[in-house]
Image (cartoon, rainbow, N blue to C red; front, side, top):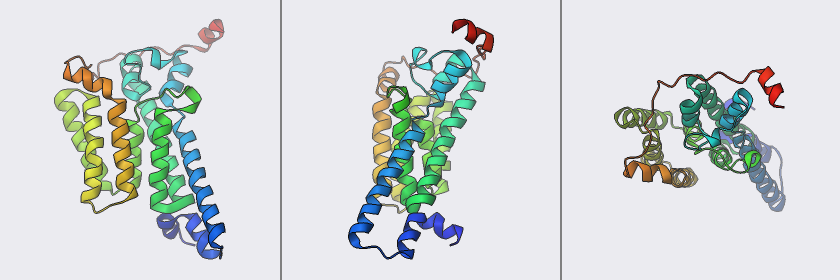
Length: 243
């Protein structure tokens, strides 16, 4: 069994080819695998690194500051660039891990889409943090990269950069890019579940950014700034004192 075959089809499909299962048994295994893929990906997505960073480095909850969003942008505004990079890396890599599990273990390309989608949902509605998470933009970006084709990720990244540089609104760039995503998939000749998943991600992203959209329309949305000073993390001694 070579790696490229597993990459394209997943281990589960290889299992089906190697073992002659009855129609009922095959259906049962497939349903169980789908559910397992969704659950694992959701649990991975629920690991929200902005909340973890704020609690471990500052003994705080990022959701009590700024926009109240548990995401990298609010982390940067509140705690600075270093913590934002750490948060971004964690939220990006968790979607990479989930997509790889979905692709290699379960259903190949479609497994990566399913895993990416539920990782995205886990980030927004994390079971570990009372279902109050971020807006899923970084996680969605990782999903887009892992699902491919690569030129769609590059195109959306360039579009995002242009919008943010021109307007200083991260939320506007995020919403527009995820709304364009299903269109690019369709132009790439991809149909069915991949486009449906992209539409779901775009719809949830718009809903999650509804307050940002209102503030943009009213001219009240905060603009991104890279001049935030990094706050000093809480020391172990200070944590012990608070305990």
